[in-house]
Amino acid sequence: MSKNFQRARARVGVMTVGHEPYWEQFSGLREELAGYGQEFENRLREMDVEVVSAGFVDTVDKAFAATEYLKKQDVDMLFSFLSTYVTSSTAATPILGLSVPTVLVALQPRQRLDYTNTTTYMQLANDNICSLPEIAGVLVRAGRPAAGMIVGTLYDDPAATAELRSWCRAANARRAFKYARIGYLGHTYEGMYDMNSDPTAFTASFGAHVQMLEMCDLAKAVNGATQREIDAKLEEIHSVFTVSDPFIDPVTRPIKPEDLAWSAKVAVGLDKLVDEFGLTGLAYYYKGLDDNEYERIGSNMVLGNSLLTGKGIPLAGEADLKTCAAMLIMDRLEAGGSFAELHPCDFKDDIVLVGHDGPHNIKIADGRPVIRGLELFHGKRGSGIGVEFSIQAGPVTLLSIGQTAQGRYKMIVAEGESIKGPIPQTGNTNTRCSFGRPVATFVEQWCSAGPTHHFALGVGSKAAEIKRTAGMLGIEVQVI
Image 1 (cartoon, rainbow, N blue to C red):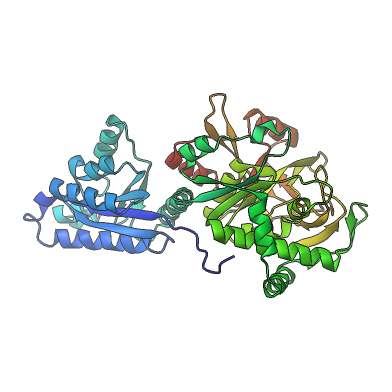
Image 2: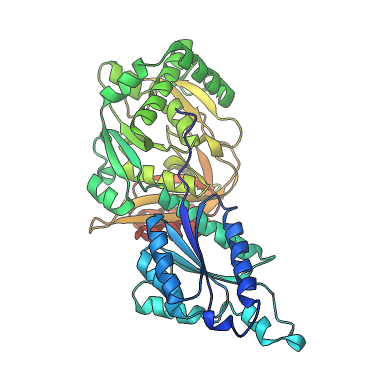
């Protein structure tokens, strides 16, 4: 893969809104408020987004100009920084004209007024929330309610800063689909009705183009791998993974040098495929037949998949396009996002194992991931190498994307805890997860929501940010 790959950063619009009639009445007030707006912009620039400033907007004419400018800049969302009381006409004009999610920001400089010495000037300099009801009400009346609000103080307010960072991560998740190509290679695993997808509906909901790919494309890329590229990939594999001996499971076997070399060659081919088609993600599955070339490629993609997924290019097995989208969202929310499904429950410890036979996000592994030789991949053709690990202990979030009876996409979310403990040593990932309720109750509640049976497993408590991302995309969300 090209070393130049970088995640697309959201283009975030920002404007500081003021009220022109005050300037002739209170000398220096405009300059002070504009300075606060600049400090807010500087804070935004620390959030891993591309900031597009429309400057200081204090009249309707300037609001028109800001709207025109921000439209040309292709912004993904807008922060409207309310510096004092402002009229809704000045603040709402760009919001209604841009048609992007908007967060109203009311962060006053002081934690409280110095009541015995307060002047009208001082009140106006801290009047950030005064027009919040007016603007929010107008937006509701216009059928375009604000995506959210951040209320607090400009300084020494960790909660407000966390909210700002959360919105920026959600904007990055939304931007990931814009102008993106999600590859679709092969076909879904036979008989898995829940994973069948309509590429047109996918594009309509998420905005990404679904790039149809052939196994011929991947085979060409694999066969184009040079020995130098293969050697470099082998070096990368040894730097990331621990090579493990077989376990008691008769399916496991020693890793043969030729198996590792072939997996490295396939990994180089995957890098080339991503580069050639400019892919942001890939959903893939190909059965193959009689140990032919396509079968040998398809059964040895796990190492390359896991390396790419850890670098921010999610690959979803069994051609699960919806879970590829879930993994992409979780990655951009800085949660990782590993391909997973429900495995057996442990009813004594009241946990459920979650994992899969690949691909995985090695970035969130608990320690060095293990690779293990496999005589077969259960339910699939071929043999090769599997990746085995648990994700980091601590809070985790599950994100599945299903579809309703009306065909609309729906995000299904659960927050839980990854708990250290023994896992099967079968060449698959497995993480011990608890969800704050009897495990049987959780499984029933999760399944009743109608998920795709795969999901993206990520670290951290991300339900709130997923809800924000879903809101930006106009997709229903249910938290279990």
